[in-house]
Length: 268
Length: 328
Figure 1 (cartoon, one colour):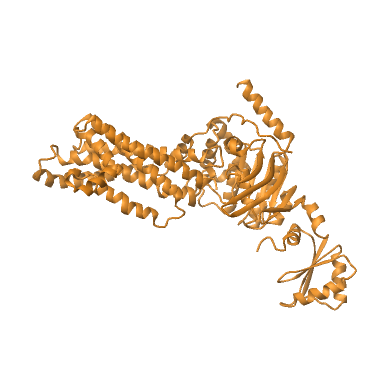
Figure 2 (cartoon, each protein chain N blue to C red):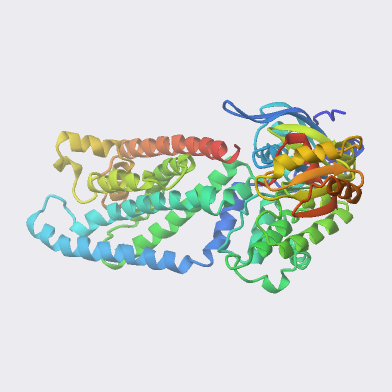
């Protein structure tokens, strides 16, 4: 009657989150051009309009920054772009996987677990951030927004910042049952203000105390400090470690939350 | 290959082929206060086509999701291929094929890409997948659409692709949750034909449906579910023999006259083994000989607008057991 539970035979190959990344790569064959175009146009507009245009005004009036305004602002733009792309990629596309095209439900019918689906989606976003940040840096360099090789470290700094935030957004995407206003609120009241209050355009020492506290909480400020430190120096090792630790803490908590919510959502 | 592993593997295959492929005792699924599956027992043997028949909300899909090792069991015991889904979910899923109620295809990818990506989830290599995909495309009659996007395909084609996809890992058990719901009759027949071929090839089929014709076509054995419980079990023929008569006379009267006519019919049929069921639009008369019964009713000057004699179906079994039709 009752067949006793036995030890599982080994699988042909251990399934892993990379299978999910591979799926995204197959899907991206259709839209990689638009990723590249967007990845080039965004830095071009920011670097030209704000870095070069606004920079002329700022450089005429201020000598506090010690470097041209473009060099000051470009690593921050790079980091902010990574965070915005991460938030966008972790919101509606993930909701689609749960709700509209339901591909995640198909994945967990295979040996893949909800945690692996979650990890795979996050890895894919990280991969996209690396590509995007590299493009951004190339455009910055082309317009004189870089001064030293250390600026390459802005790529991992921006990727870490984006992922710290994307993991939290992924957890939210797994919780939200429908479009509603959840993501709109997120973009309007979290992502955009973060861009304005994280020392992107000016050092946060210019802000009143309450504004500085907004920056301290925001992962974007910590990422911006790291990327800017890479680009123009002046960041102590202790401060750098502090920023990294803060972002890693966000990432760890975010990934744990996201994995948990993926399991809850996909195994009802 | 290490000897301990292969011995383990053989052991698991041997045990599961000796006993039931799936066995459940007092299997229960609760969502908060709501009990979707209420302590059911069943077994499925290798090579069998086993069905869960019931109306929407009977607990069929919840049962399927537990067998598919997607939804955790609330209480009771469930063993699939001799293993416990709570402990060995991925290993069991590696040997299952799943056709969910709603398609989970990526509409932006081509037919072939959908199969490829899904095969990769099982850890299959490219060289194994290439011939396998061609074979499945042929089986699903989709070879000509292999490199077309999925989005514009018809509902029947998408369903066939989902079935092809579920076979990518040569599953030992194929789970089909309402495989033909929402398809037109022609598409359903094509799909039934494909499923029948799988059954002939020895694949164990477990399916849910609320179409009794589907259950009769495909299932060797089925359970009738209602309100989370199993209310009857057997082959379609056994169920009809146990819970219905050989024939059914369907008598239609003018609107509103059905109840009155039913009373008259009961009187007319006195002394003959017969059962009368009143539906909103007709009266059903369950008897051994339908034509004789219709003559007898007419002799009593109860004249229906129309009459029809047919054999009993699972729909009649369901009506008898639950007092409701399958599809409202």
